[in-house]
Amino acid sequence: MQEWFIHPVVQGAIMPFLAGLIASAFLAPLRLGGLAAVAGFATAVYLVVGFEFSPMTTIRKVMLLGLIAPVIGVAADFAFKPTRYTAPLLALSCGAVSIWVFLALLQQRELAQAVLLGGGVAAYVAWLVGFMVTLRDDSIRAGAASLGLGLGTGVAAVLAASATLGLYAMALGSASGAFLLVQMLAGRRFFAGIAFTLTAGLLAGLLGAASYHLAQLPWHALPVMALLPLAARLPVPAKWPVAGQAVAISGVTLALAAVSCFLVWQASRGSPG
Amino acid sequence: MRKILIGSMLAAAAPMGVAAPESYTLDPHHTFVHFGVDHNGFSTIWGRFDRSSGKFTFDRQAGSVVLEVIVETASVTTGDSARGNRPRSRDEHLRSPDFFNATEFPRMTYKSRNAKLNGDVPVEIQGELTLLGVTRPVTLAVDRWKCAPHPVTRRPICGGNAIGGLKRSEFGMKWGIPATGDDVMIRVTFEALKD
Image 1 (cartoon, rainbow over the protein chains, first blue to last red):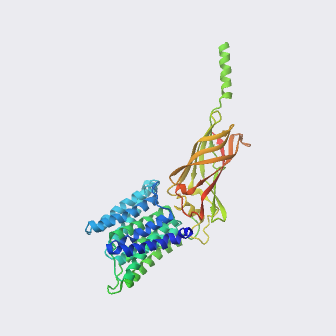
Image 2: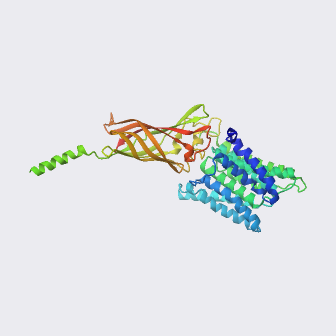
Image 3: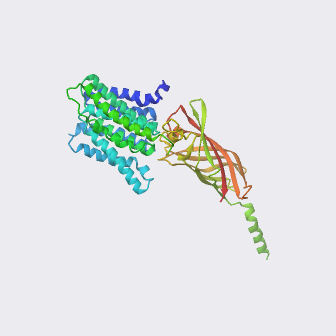
């Protein structure tokens, strides 16, 4: 049994998928089905390295924020009425927080390079969070975007030499797939909310940026990944069944994620740089 | 006249009786930190760090050794640096956050102020290793030690080997356990030139 739990596929895909499935199915009636994202991520963290936050390394900061994001999301979903400023505000906040996440790395660089890299990371995270949060009222589009972001970032991170970051991101993708699957089987949409979209956007952004900074992810894979929340807005006929809409939109987001992974794979050809 | 004579004799005798602490700098071309770890229960994979630096002060009179070694984690090599058909080599993987996280933690350090000596030969170094931001005690047994003039340059030099071990999980390096072993064997081979 122990051997089963240490297998990477179990840690990064199967168990997070099951956690996402359970969270989606049982919490959806409470409008908390969006917690599927953090359920999958937390499951992977528990299985891969466990919950340790000292010393506070870059990856542990990502872990911590991944656990805090849904708390903020649930509070925002239930305590505040979202306005048109909600997404930009959360995007800017998450962009600023990403600087804290990568501060130890940025401090090792020359000022100009640190500003460029820090700005790039903040922009990437803010972009993903901002556009993901705007999908909060459409759980199919939000789920499809998170599915593509999670699996795409995960495979890209593994190709870039970090299995840990890869498994965390794949866990997000697997749990998002479970969130979609439950809706497809139920034949109706659930409430995704900020709890789901903030968690997915922030984790995908930070894990992608971490794969660039700490592993060997080529930077040009990230702009392709950033297109996913936009691609999830693909118009599909409203009269289509939920399952049909989910398959169509996920097909587009996964195709874009595959393009990003191809760029990472292509960059890995040849001698180590 | 008698006082001057006695004073001169004492002054001349002092250096013979009270040896001053000697400071040595590790020779990076002849100092390497090697490590060995179990791989899937089949074999032991050995690797080493190609770049390290450090100093130690050896006080024979006080029987003490003060040591500091800095190892550059990005210099890790296990003889597998070519990617072949894989996206990344094992050495690249070792530099990633799964193992040494070399971008965030470019150096690991070993510091010691405690050593056990047998006569004027160190036999055990008790120090603290800082790896991935975690500091824990690591003891090294010195199984070879020699100080003598260099055969060519005649410059005083000390060299030797030391062995030890650690559990990498205690430093937060948990990826791949138990397939890639938790117990890490350490072998340090060093030569140091007197300052």
